[in-house]
Image 1 (cartoon, rainbow, N blue to C red):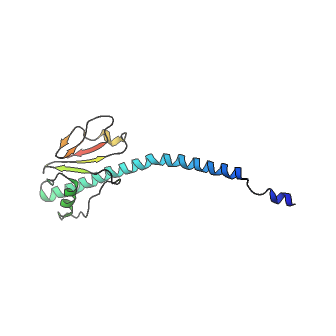
Image 2 (image 1 turned 45 degrees about the horizontal axis):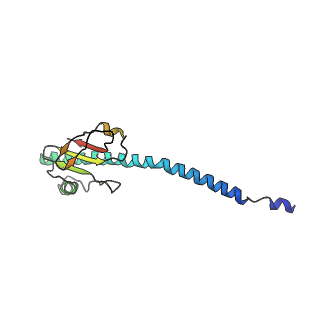
Image 3 (image 1 turned 90 degrees about the vertical axis):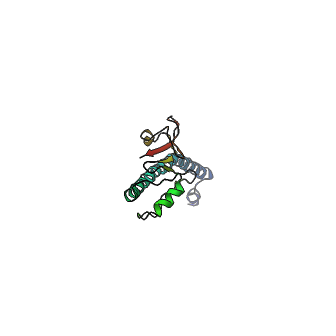
Length: 150
């Protein structure tokens, strides 16, 4: 009867094998999640620019022109202080890149740098455009600049 009690535990080798398998599975999952995070941040960037476009249209409806500013901080200040109900405009979720804006009163360009160069929205944006301080970059396979102009 004492022999059965001695054989009920796990050996050190069995425990190490289980820890190795769990570590291997965890690393595979974490590597796979990296691309989901990139796509999530890119989706947010595109949504942020569309939100700013809505704010710019409200501004245009009230003032008859778009803000004549060539930087993001100035745009934020202008929209927040314009009395159209905007409390803030978004900043890039990654904090390493920034959104850009340039406007001449009758048109504007918004720009964000996407992480995934294969993002489908890059096929629908404008390329090879220099507008104010915003450079939308060349039309190439490595283009990560998402630019919209109105």
